[in-house]
Image (cartoon, rainbow, N blue to C red):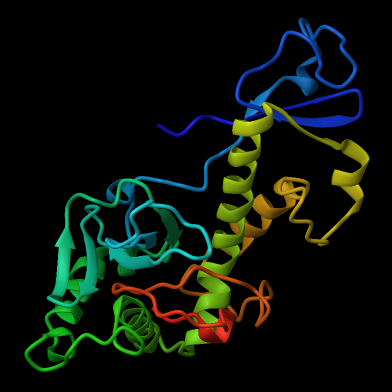
Length: 274
């Protein structure tokens, strides 16, 4: 079971841990009775139960991902949830409608809560699209590079955008705008968890957190945590999404596909297929 990460501030330090310590691990001062603005808070996990989502793009470890993780060398699988939490996902056997198995995944909302007309018809659109010959293995074979789970999600979203009279998304735009920001947050969160499991605490200067801006620092995975959370909220991937400003061709992502990944030296954004 995933452990909750606690965040607190003290003596100009941002401190992350699994449980609030009695004494500050930086200065040794007792933490009991601190002021409210310094009270510990629980960091929100980037993972969710996909079957409790509605109208979302879901990313989860693929069936052949034995470690069931999201690290950069692991295969991932994508699907789309209907309004009841059933996950439609394309595999070698055609479109599956899973009512279980997506309990630990990354969720990207696709429809704003005020888009009532879209919410009312989402299930019908998704079912009709899934029944098309494009996803029938008799007519079209699953291909791990260019006709796969990622293709299914992208083409469904583009069919919705077309009905709404909006611009279609390319594979690169789709990855950059919808997936890359969330996977960056997953990477930071996972790195933090691993650090805490080994070292109990992770600390960074509070001033550094406030001044380093957009700078990426893999050795300090949470120094821009608050900023990353704001970016996720502002770029949540609704259907009105514009071309994303986050990520690029130097951004590394796990490969999203159903079958076993082929070894390739190029794991850049352009090489990320599903």
